[in-house]
Amino acid sequence: MPKIDWLTIRTSATAGLIIIIPAAVLSAVLVGENGSRGWSILFALVILLGFFIAGFGAGRLRDDTPMMHGSLAAMACYVVVQIFGAIRRLTAGDPINPIRYPLILMIAATVGIAGSLFADWSARKTARMQR
Image (cartoon, rainbow, N blue to C red; front, side, top):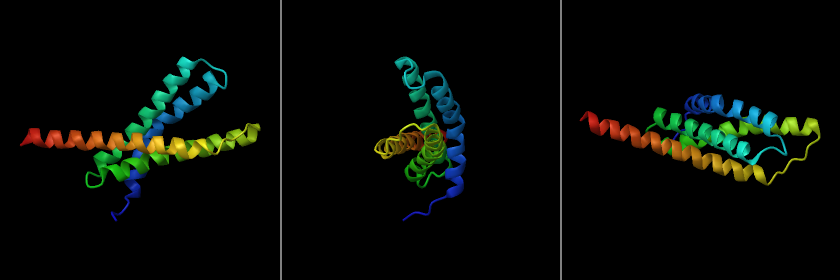
């Protein structure tokens, strides 16, 4: 099994969190529970972009194992955001739906893999063009 490069995951997850955290905060403030469906979809797409960026960064930094590192970086982003989200929900007395966490974690991992595959594809294309 390949060795996990935690520095790559931390660096890539940080890049994704730069996009995800403001989108999650704005979504919680502007959309809330009964907000506009259009805004909800927009913020969800921006958050998915953050997972993609985390995967892309990991794929660029680790071209030997891009998918593994891309999925781990995106999942790290999700876990960080959800830790704070769960704490906020518990302190506010809001309910927590435990079924949704692993499902969205798998979506984050899939989008991270897509980002890492895009990074791998673009690196190979650049290498072919330079030959």
